[in-house]
Amino acid sequence: MHFKHRLRDATLAGIAGFVAVICLSYLKDWTHFMVLSAPMGATLVLLLLLPSAPLSRPKNVIFGHLLTTCLTVAGLELIPDPLLGIGLCFGLSLMLMVLTDTLHPPAGANPILIYLSGAHLTPLDFILPTLAGTLFMVGFASAYHYVFTHRRYPFGPKVSKTRVQDDTPPQPAKPGTAAD
Image (cartoon, rainbow, N blue to C red; front, side):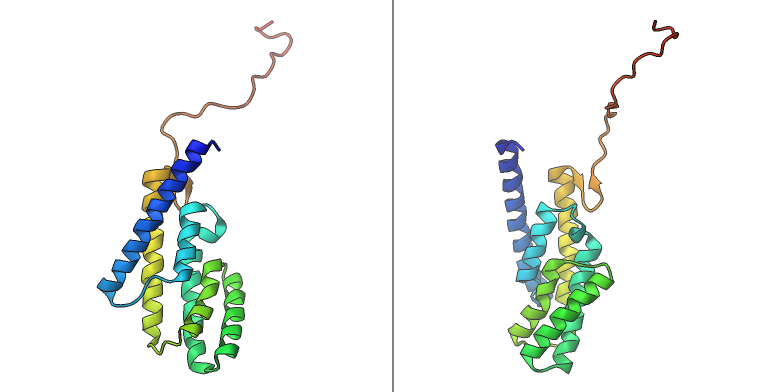
């Protein structure tokens, strides 16, 4: 890719990342719970820069984060020891994301983040921010790619309105046809 195109794409992604993080920060003021975290930042990187990667599918983003968050919230209630809880919830999160076909690497950080935060919140105070944040990011990525990269997220490239030329080379005429 030509440097000029890389610079344009990098600048657009940087500006989009700035806007998304600001929006997520303001969402905290409107909803009164924190929707921005390190795993959400890593998710934004995937959605803005690798939108067609299998791990960036909306199903993986939303359900990967929800699955790991719900599992860890349950783990907080059942396993008060943070060392054992982090390890068990992290391992189970990986296993369940693979089994449910919702693997999303940034979501793997949720058990670590939740246990290390030491927060004593109700389960919904963990789950609702995760849901709000992931839904926002998927919607934001859809709008960003449609407007600026001319690709549809999560469905791949836009279909051009101009007819695509057939790339197959012309076949030589058969002997005995009108071309002879």
